[in-house]
Image 1 (cartoon, rainbow, N blue to C red):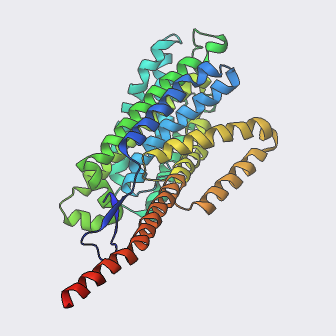
Image 2: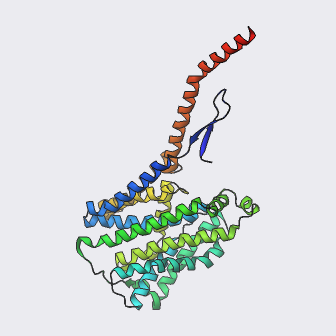
Image 3: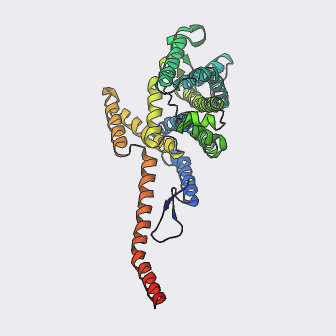
Length: 365
């Protein structure tokens, strides 16, 4: 369904009010946003500003990946930090044991981090996706904490609470954040393209059918278990890439930060505020909230006041737009078009009625 049908009085067929702006407008806005993101670190090269940009790209990748599963299938996961941590440890362990120098070569490990995370998600997802709703949410949290405990206790591999230290990149100065930012932007574009393709594909329609009514989708012949598992692995792949980018950027990996429950809450907030299940929702949520979060942290971090400011902002947005920013704005835009169409119908009704009355009188004469 791509339009709202308005049946005017005396009309033979309904008028169609499109749900979305024209394709040229949507593609033009996407291209304009991409240009702005490319130019951002060049226009504002301050290291503090560009470091906020890097964190924004990391969370943008993770938000898009999380939305591919939770937004499209309706299964809300609060345990994707498991794959964020797996991605971090994958890059750190390969770098340390292979004696790789810090530099551009570490970015080649990002796909490896994604693949390892996706492979780890298959047996986990096969077990978790047998349950639904609150039970699924609780189990995802449990898996994340189990992996965190393993990272603390498998000291032979992870060095426990001592953490792992990554080699320092070969570049320094104001240029330090640039490679991380642009690699993160490239990964976010790939994740967004994958989310767009899934949403428009037959497979994506099956995921939305599962979200709306899983039993009916199963009755229609959709392979429900396989569809959910593929989406879960694809989601873990991109979240693992986000973790793989985070590790060399901060230069160290610790269990409590790799498998961090606040990461899950942050990603879920980004998607819900922007609009869960939409393409632009995770993008808007990450680009708006992560810079604000980092700004509040820099201003009020010592007293944890940034958490209060961030929470108040989140409550206000969801209070004014319960479905998220993108669905809320879209609904308002659609309602305005419907009101305009009905107003035009009301303006033309007396004239049409008069013509019909004149024709009727001539016929009776």
